Length: 77
Image 1 (tube, rainbow, N blue to C red):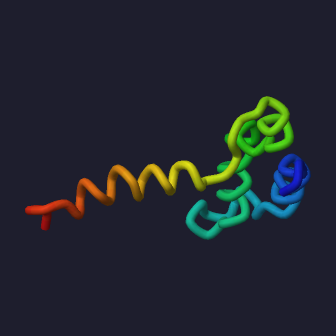
Image 2 (image 1 turned 180 degrees about the vertical axis):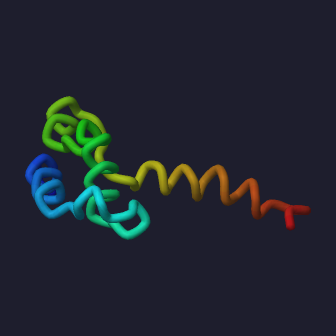
Image 3 (image 1 turned 45 degrees about the horizontal axis):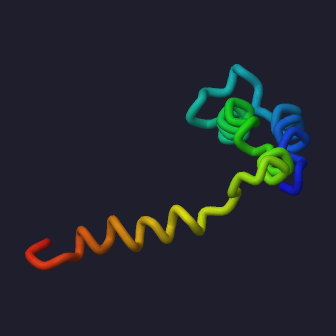
């Protein structure tokens, strides 16, 4: 999103289905609510400036190194 998360959230809000549309038939409204509630988590420029990791690589590596090895160990089904 290159620092444009708020722009995306605003655009989703503008294109959201009317409130008269049932929730299960309103994917844009659902996406808007989900992203708006997590806007702080999408502020990648701030995270990078603070030296925080923004990729999934470390998590995926840890999953492979710890979880998968444990689940695929001897005697595991």
